[in-house]
Image 1: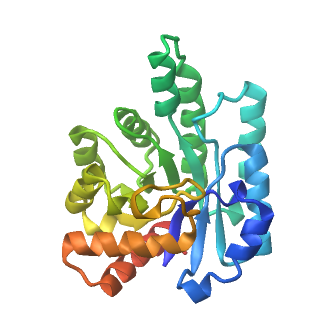
Image 2: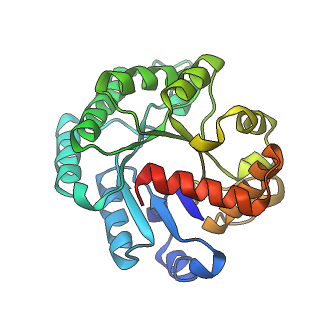
Length: 259
């Protein structure tokens, strides 16, 4: 299988050395490794160089952190442009739903405009480079992301670990946007319901590692092989065999990222 979304640069080197060489024995053929900012992009690039063919890098700016300055954004856009040939996507990019919600809960103001500007610039770059995008855009932010995708004419969009309103789900299905499920598909009713209704041809499996999970995964470090658990849960919801589910999710991911 393919882990469609993982933050390899957030693992310690010792963890990577223990985890990555044995992927094939765990029936994991490759990983889509996303990035958080310029420093993260560089580390992702270095990891991909150490594991050619196994690690497929994506470069971007994660929105759940302080927005970059104009000069920092310019440096990131330039770097991504220079290394576009080696990346499979622009990502992770999106809007800061959780940071905004936390600020508002504390009674603090939150300025969304800088993040909209960053996302707009990164989508414009993806369109220019003809690369797919990996999105962190949940709940009402998904509607804004859909508007910007349409503005830039981007058809290949992957909303990772998606949760959102009916309006967003319907629109994303109509546009053929992909989503991916994490191990929480095993135990989260909201996610399981989304998995039942989203078209099987537009679905992938991810871990979002090293993010930890609950339920049967509580206390366990997140590893790429957990996508097999995702596939098994998704198979159960649709009446597929585990082997059928793994093959379908893998084919969807390989097609989307042109692997």
